[in-house]
Image (tube, rainbow, N blue to C red; front, side):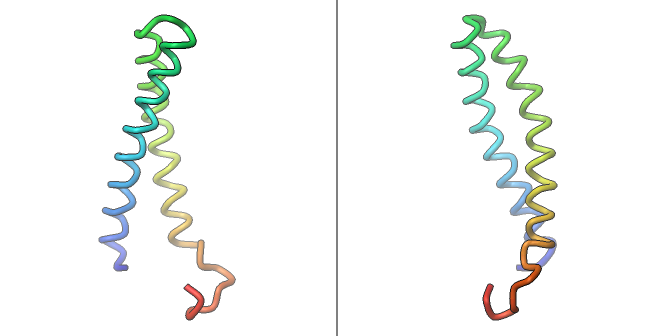
Amino acid sequence: MDEKLSRKRHLAKTITWRIIGTIDTVLIGWVVTGDPWIGVQVGGVEMVTKMALYYFHERAWFRYGMLGRKKNES
């Protein structure tokens, strides 16, 4: 996979996964506290921080994940 395409794919995966995860976090925050606004606040902060962490994790995995493997094993 070429570098430009992989970056776009990783970014798309990051965004779609965060949408799913953030909805989950908002609902859990709402259920636990009984206040939907707290769920939204926690979900908003969580969305930004985890999206950045996931993107950099995905980039590192793409770049260094093949270390120690032979070319034909991938």
